[in-house]
Every structure is written in structure tokens, then in C-alpha cells.
Length: 425
View 1 (spheres, rainbow, N blue to C red):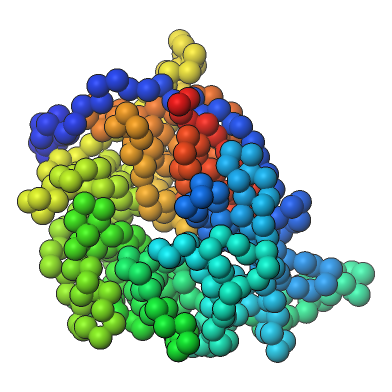
View 2 (view 1 turned 90 degrees about the vertical axis):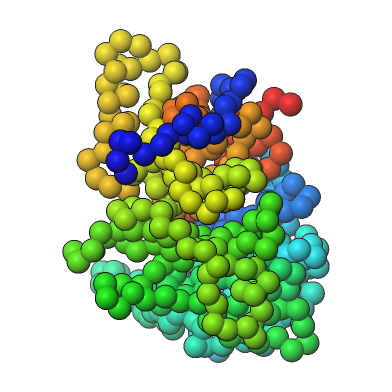
């Protein structure tokens, strides 16, 4: 990224006329796992009602079990409304839940030992229907290791067979069609498709529809972001990343597919209608369709690239500078600015935090972004970003949603939920 590359103001990127000074006021917090230890959250989803849905599992060390759950919470109180516990151990094999989403028809869909379909937003009474047991080839086999409760010296362990469906995240771009990314080592090296339109004849093995390897560089792409365009529904945007290794630098591409073709399980091979080289040295961590003209791609380390989707070209780059405006003055403010702007290590992908996948366009035109473990509000045209005030315990993760006037944050390692008010109206 050279210094002569256009900046947002050079391309007349929209100006934020009346920027809001965002104060992330914490309204409530809730332990999603209801105080249980050793819980891990998998996903968070805003429901059409405005409530939120989370999936998680917890380790029961005493009973040598791993239990999986879905729960629905209201906003902003985060009160538990409904909860469902999966039968996680089947034929001496432990299954753990993966993502849960709301389908276009309003039903909730999740995967554990089977495919589960819940009627509307009601989960407490169990699923409306399920599939057969999930295809074992589509699962990652792991050992669930527990301390032997009878060993007073805590040196012996007990292992159980466990499986988890290979699915990092999933979306439903077309009704009845699920796209999800997977890879045996969590590398998202494949995009697979599930056709759930016919509940009476469900196949639990996803069909691989896209992967790409560059044999000359001995690398494979990770497909970390999939997004159906809001403005051009024929466009399916896919971010392809290659992480830095000792052989080659990190780099990223934006692939644009025809969504109807990509979601047709009988159409192959899948070929992008456009490929845009984003960066030859950085990965892309989040995508935002800002308006009909611009896509924003956040590399965190090297700014936000602005793609003109009408011309299918990189138009500019936004190099964000952190502005502290929370009462810090003098040497304290100077040192804080220096500390936040200087990076000793490059940000790398982390499915729990850094790979946050989605920036959010706020009401005034500014953008909510994530950087390491902090939320920032960015003014793209002015190339500045501000830590929302007060910072206190506002800890960012990749798992967050906007619901009405609130941002709901889910902590990955203990399932704590936080609600922060960002708008007054």
C-alpha cells in the first residue's frame, strides 16, 4: 500500500455530516451458561423478534460429560426466555453443537448429533423435526479427555470419543440452501452446501462446492467470509485469505460469484465472475457493504480497503488513526495514543476474536469495527477511529450483533453476555 494510493476523500467517499459521540453504556450482563464453569460459546444470532439466540457447550467434569445447549435471551435485559439441551452422548459418542441460525422461513436450525429444526423461535419444547444422525465423514473426531474422579492424585485421565460437525460458520443466502465453511484443521479451506428444502429427504453430508489451491505457491485459500449482497442479490461475495508462512506473505482476494449459480448444487464447477486482488501482504478480517457503490474490507494491520463495486476495482484505502477523547490529557493521553497506534506484532486470524467478519454501518454513517480486543467507531472519510466511551470492561469479540439500539456481545470462553446501549432513540 503505497503513500500515493487514493484516500477516501480523494474518491468523494460519503462524509459523516453529524457524527455521534458514541457512549457504550452497559445495560445488563448475563451468564449464558447460568454460572456453569468450562463453557464455550459457538455462535450468536439476532432473531426477527429482536431477541438473540446463542449456542454453546460446557464440560461437566464430575460426570465426564460435554453438554450442548441453545438459549434465547431478550434485549436489553438478556433475560433467559427459552433453553434447549441436546442429547449430546449417543452410542458412547459425545457430539457438540455448532452454529445455530434463524432461517428465512423463521425457523431455527442447528447441528449437533443431527440436524435440528425448531418451530419459529420456540426451542424449549424441542425440535419440530430432525434428520438422521449426521454423516460421520462430515465430523471432526476428537478425544474428550477428563480427569479421573477416582484418582486422588489427579494424574489419571479418562478419554471418550467425541465428534463435532465440521462447520465454522454458515449462512442461508437462498431459502433452503445453507452454505458453510469447513476444514479438518479449522482452516475454512472448503465451502460446502446443504439443501434443507426437503425435510423428508435430508442429506446430512454437505456437498463441497468450492475450494482453491495455488500449486505454484503451495498454498490453499481459506474462505473466511461469505456475504450475499443486499443491493445486488445476484452477487455473492467471498473473501479468500492466505495466512503468512515462512514461504510466502499473507494475501487476500475478493471473489464475486453469481449467487444463483453458486447456490445450485447441480451446477459445477463454480467460477467467480470477478476476482479482485485486495492485498499482497494482508488478510481481510471483516466486510461491510457500505452502500450501492462501496465495499469496505478491513485488514486491521494495513487499513480498510475500499472497493468500488460498480467498477470492480480497488478505489482507495483508509488508514485509520486512533483519536482518544475520553478525558485523557497531557502525557497520559499522548502515551495512550502512542500505545494504541503502534503495533509490535501483526494481527492474525483468531476465530474467537480477530476474525470478526462483519463491520456495522451505524446510523450516522460511521462504522463499528473490532481491533484485537476493542471496539472502535471509525469515520472512514476522516480516517479516524475512536474507542467508545467509557471503555471500562467493554471487551470485543468476533461474536456480537446489533439489535435495535443495543450491541450484544458474547464472550467465547465463558458464554457471558453483555448489552451496551449505543443509541438514545
